[in-house]
Image (cartoon, rainbow, N blue to C red):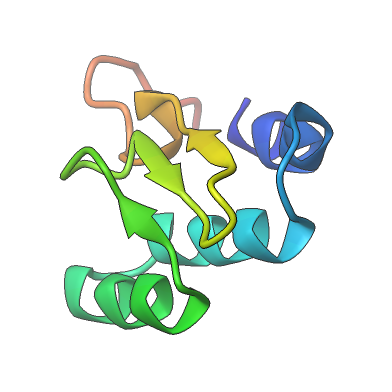
Amino acid sequence: MRDEFWDTAPHYGGQKEIWDALRAAAESDISLAQAIVDSAGIIVQAPDLTICYDERGAKYELPKYVLSEPTNLIRDN
């Protein structure tokens, strides 16, 4: 489900480069994520990355399921 979101995210508007940076930040540890966000010029509105803006004012909304591993699911073996 995460891959589907990231594959279609650029179609929601905004720049593909910002979506790519947000994906990299979401999949990184906190210090690397901060460096990615800063270098891409992303303005973080919500501390959990769910609402961000680029330097041109385009809004990027991330669902919580792309930001962390689910804890309430059983793994298939």
